[in-house]
Image (cartoon, rainbow, N blue to C red; front, side, top):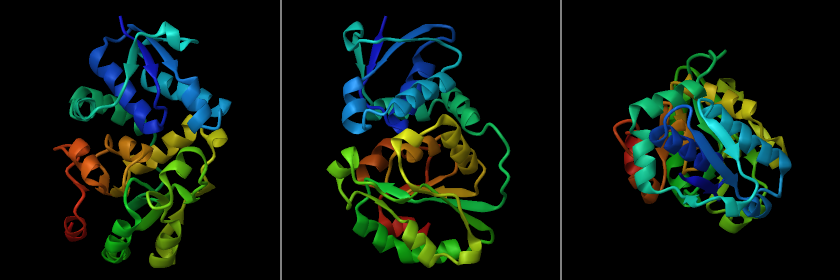
Length: 264
């Protein structure tokens, strides 16, 4: 029996781990898991709150399983790694998709007729965003309803973010505030991202808003890009690699070509 070591602990990584369990294991099975302490230390500031969040997040999506969290990596026998094949299987299995979709949309949104823009961008070259932004904001301003901003206003370049740098991880919050008609904006952003403030309830609140939107725009990739794949609302300008992995009949509005994105 597989005893899983999970090294990548972002919310996108973990949703595909949960999807893989839903795909390959029957309800009621015992699933043994170890979350890498080394990764928590290196990439999550050794945050106990973030570690607790990971456990709660996995339990929420896998509530029909008997979960056993292992304290030592040596107790595991299988390293879970995301691949293109795993991603395609998870997002295109209708049973798994519906389970995750229902978990993400667990209450009625208090807003109606709105588009969501997620302000944190990762894995999309900054120049590519700028090249698409004029047409994008024109479209957004012509939308009849409101524009909800989710995500961070600014990025703290520590840990993992410092490694990737400002050209691949950045916030478009200032661009949105400057280019969208102010009367249209509902600002639900946070000032910056803090591992110690991560909570399952805040993630689910944002996912509920995304699930009930007309469309949700996520540039690049990252955790909310991955979660949005299960909502039928995602529109994304991303890189070629992400498009190759995530584009499907269930997610046809994923673009890596700026002209195609703009014409959409």
